[in-house]
Picture 1 (cartoon, rainbow, N blue to C red):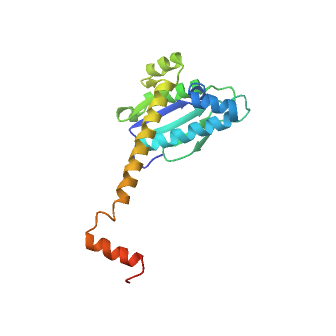
Picture 2: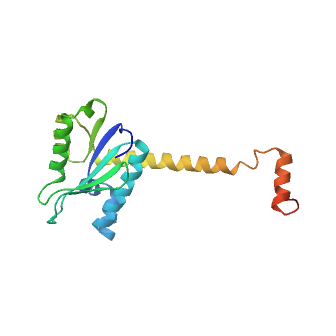
Length: 182
């Protein structure tokens, strides 16, 4: 995934999150499951890049007779589709069980996002941290606000370049802009 090891690996039960976030529920009802899934993936891509997390968005095969697959979206986010008949829960639990024996457990956190409390307790038993869908939503929203405020501040600073110059330089640039001097 990313060039340097992430500080955490975040496993997201995709359809569980879609069924818990109000905006994704509404989007699913209005435009369908694909639109809700795409919106979630975009939100996770932004969040993961900002946090420096390696994120796996895991989706059930959802009745499709297709083999398991994985799609790398960004250096921080990949989307995993389970085998036919396999649940996202079992896929995530298996990943947690493997991580338990992995040396990365000493340097990286493993976080599972789902609102299924029984599933959260199971992955906690494997040594992962469990967070609810609503907690993840609040974190994604918080990061989104932080990024927007940084962008506004950067835009504000970039607009001050001219006014931060000495008055004589400002006058020369104004004259050049008006074509009065070369």
